[in-house]
Length: 121
Image (cartoon, rainbow, N blue to C red; front, side):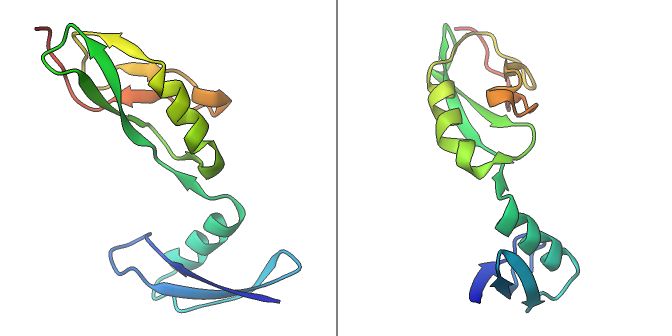
């Protein structure tokens, strides 16, 4: 038996949710003030995911970097590898908000997109 504590981030309340795991099965969840807490704990324990916000290099732009992010959350264990892939990217200005920077990053079926416009010099 293992007791775990997670701060739920599904809503602004930020409940500290305690749960008990026995043989890789969640047996009890306590401390969540809304139903989202139970779902969050299950997802976070069995399949943690994150949206990856970062920047990529741009040549010929008014700024040297443009902010990007994954359109959806990707598995947490892929974040470091995804960052290495994005470090290889160099875009040409202009860049438009929503431009796909990398399609289907790491075979996750999630695109990385620009999160702002960036004009040419």
